[in-house]
Image (tube, rainbow, N blue to C red; front, top):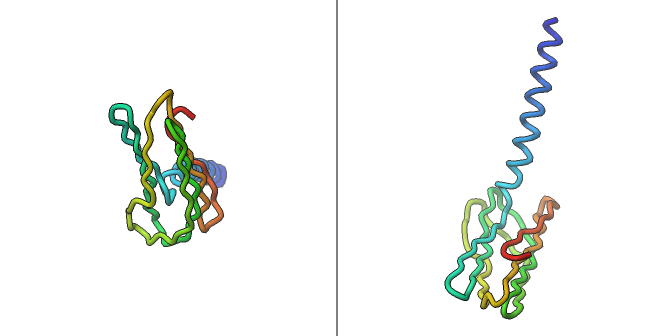
Length: 116
């Protein structure tokens, strides 16, 4: 009975850690998007804030009244929060920002904002 209780406790801890691990990976992403809308304009900032020093590749696109693109491959120091790119456009009939990111660990993800 004691081993069964230990096994159940270990399973509960593993499940809790797995759930927390998934949420944790999203909160520790190296890049994030900051958005500011003002009147008929939108400005997005691609912000680096990695918990570890690493190389990151990204492709940013902002579509609104016009289309802007910026890509890069850069080294980010751990805990060094700074803006990698700043784009702005007229909102027009809507806007969409997408960023394709690949971190040094091989983790890839897409950030989006706006009417995507």
